[in-house]
Length: 444
Ligand SMILES: NC(=O)c1ccc[n+]([C@@H]2O[C@H](COP(=O)([O-])OP(=O)(O)OC[C@H]3O[C@@H](n4cnc5c(N)ncnc54)[C@H](O)[C@@H]3O)[C@@H](O)[C@H]2O)c1
Image (tube, rainbow, N blue to C red; front, side, top):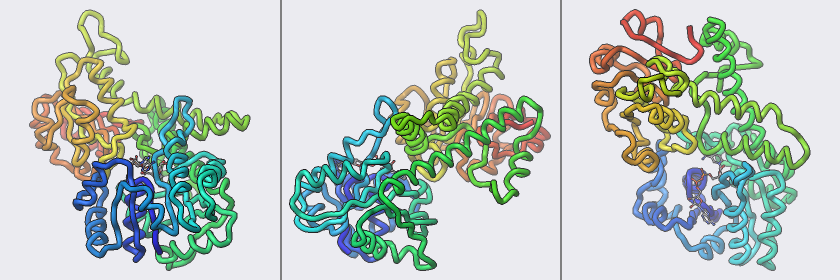
């Protein structure tokens, strides 16, 4: 099938590449000329495990190409995916200017029947707006489909190729058939295609992300209560997770959720609910707990060194002045270089405000971090060197290489053996036996 993808970011590039890998003829378009130039040179502008190899292979087989030319992209595809960004507007609702801009352009250049598929995460009712935007510019027939994307950065290819489910929202039997055929190669072990109306498909995406964010804020709240009670969140989490109705997924206490999806999607759903007269009380609390969680680790560090919740300690200047904190992990989660809404940014900014000097290491996000922090912190290529002479180690993102480090080496490199474990990845009993002072999230 001939496929066009408008917007070649995380979702667009993975979508286009995976459809090419299953034998389709794909063109990916973006308005960012630098991105397209890099891709045409075989360089993948984002870090996503396995993606570069797939991009190169499909380019070599002439199944995948990249362009900035909207007209060429629209004319080629029978199925056109919109995968542009939907950032939050000022009131938290999703800003649709990129989606509707792309839809108008699609209408302008259409040369026959097309299936226009919305893969961006968009508020309920956007399907109708896309339909109107395309229809305003064309005399050709088309159908609009909502096909939200559920991939996870860091495991995006696996998620796309072996989806838990494919949601297809449309009122057109013809478009549904085309979409089912397109996805059939990914669903050979059983059809997990869910056909529904456009609005339900749009809502399914928000409801799914809102549920996952809720699980994270829920366990973080339980961790806060455990810390107060003297109970151990790790034991509590396991005790809960074996209940099949609850499960273990997304029940890890930490430094709060970040990334390009959960924060903006929860905000957008709160806003949509408000528009329809519903006060989304659970979701507002989910957000509030997450904000509190992002401030937790820096608060612990400041308190340890004698400051009071970030306020100046009387007569001693800023609470962390003269202190160096080594940070491991900057991306919002492991296996990605994405730093959008990353808890590390909130934590580091708070430590800087308290007067600390920051040295930080991340396996892949250093370039992204440089854009955010510039020269306000020292970015280190080597994980252990980051620790040399620092007053403490703060683990912010649970990359696998941080999970079983050489603690003897850490002890030697730090001024004093002190660890703030923002992801509860270490065995605190063992560390304490080794002479470390250890802080975790909601742990005894
Ligand atoms: N990143 C994820 O993990 C993820 C997962 C599921 C769904 N989503 C959703 O998918 C959508 C895209 O997210 P993303 O992370 O891929 O964003 P992104 O910012 O990585 O990519 C968006 C791309 O669209 C391009 N663009 C903007 N306007 C354009 C236009 N008119 N024509 C062509 N290109 C245009 C931008 O230059 C950019 O390259 C969002 O709605 C997001 O919520 C993201």
